[in-house]
Length: 259
Length: 291
Image (cartoon, rainbow over all chains, first blue to last red; front, side, top):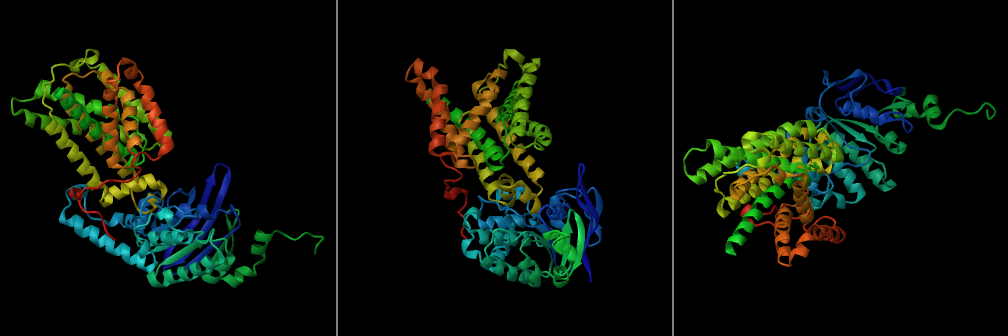
């Protein structure tokens, strides 16, 4: 298995609180892996450390064997890790097309003056960017809404647009932070198919945090279970479902008397 | 009377440049700056210093062009000096810091004897005229509008929309915040240069914090984020106090009250300003995009 993303003993302390403790993870080039755990277990903190929003207190994050510690958030995205957010963070007052185009911004090769004077290079680069963006929108069935403002899309489509926008940065690793949050069962079902399809079509690694167990069990090949910042289990879905530690973390220990 | 109207039109032009440039910082990039009068002052004084002390005896228009260039560059440099430390702050904190720097600039000028200090700077040649002012108005508007329709402009807008998301999309937000701030400051400097060569007299008290607020009122009135709105807002708030003059001294004295009332009514009626974020586009600026 070729490892694309690796975290080594990630630890994050906020003052006296240990949010994440010694978390290690390996992600293969086309793996689809889930991170689950009760609320406040430190899942989003792990994402924030991988994407550079937090600098870990200890430990290392390696992309293709290169450490990302201390890199700017934008640079980490440019190097190939992109994420979506638990509470959707689209550019609400911009059009769907502009949302996608912004993700291609760092690849644009013309300067400010070229855009003021509308040079040939400007037109060529803009045309290329737009074509790529429209192609992506077509894949995500959003092309008819290219000129709508992002805030006017229905909730499910906003989620889809956020995934499309992340993919527009052409990542090697896609991090999805609770993609099914707030979705109804039908939308979740659609999303399940979409996530798997994205992995197969773009041949990238996907790491996802999710509370919807049905989705996680259905879509993930491997699952990490985190509780109180510590990894308590790792394995494929059926192993996780039968792991007493996982059941304990989610449902609590049975009382002596009830036994 | 016609001279009076020409003077007023010229002043309108100066304020259009100021409003459009502040809108780039406040409305389009979303960085709440309250120090615009400071950059205006830097541009005005540096351009005036050039024409009083250094200008060679060449064509007046050419000299004015150089003075405007100097105004742009010096105000943009001030923008870098102030922007780099301040833009790490957000929201209210940024507003307070820029307000402070705006005042520092004014007091700095007040204590520089070579450019008049508290006596005011006199003897500035009258080189500005309607043609040059409105040429710069067009340059400013075309610059900002074209910037916004390219990838760098979109990056600037994305900061207003959601800074964390912009970072996560691979955009160096600090770089683009600084860019918007510096370009905005630079054009305020040009407005200063044009203003100095129109009024022929500069005094530090002509660049107080109140002026930053009035420019801010213009862009809020017109609609934060709309270039068209800034133009309309600047014109309205430049002409309004003059119009009120015709109604006699009492009305003129009450003009700040009328301003405030106007603003309250507008905020109740259209919280996003007259134009909101919309634009009126002319075919001159390039065709509207189809998708």
